Image 1 (cartoon, rainbow, N blue to C red):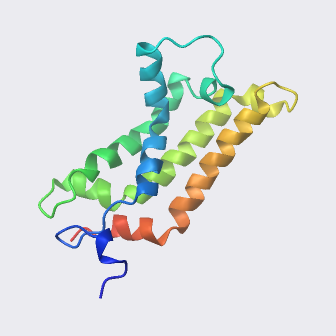
Image 2: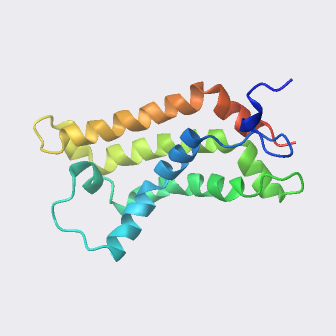
Length: 153
């Protein structure tokens, strides 16, 4: 008996990646997306604060584990490369660690905005941190996320 409705599975009865998990994966590479967009799309000086705070190239380090998980999502087949299989089976842990690394780097890079509640970017910085913490809790608590990364038979 299937744990979820049948439309959540593919032809080999592997659990499909949910829309919310795809959103988390794309949000996980937001620093890369923002930096690439900044090179091709002319951005004026007045970016929304929560975007401007996340355009530091040092924050790209937190995108690397998410890129591994995104790459391994295309190799969800039984005879996948060993590295891709390992990345997928540990994808949840990689995503959680990426978010925690992202929080630590964000705190380090934007310490002046976070340590002074009178700073003009304080609210935006706190918003980014709270949103990232919410993603960590989603990744830890979601049974669907646990099941997506555990089944790979």
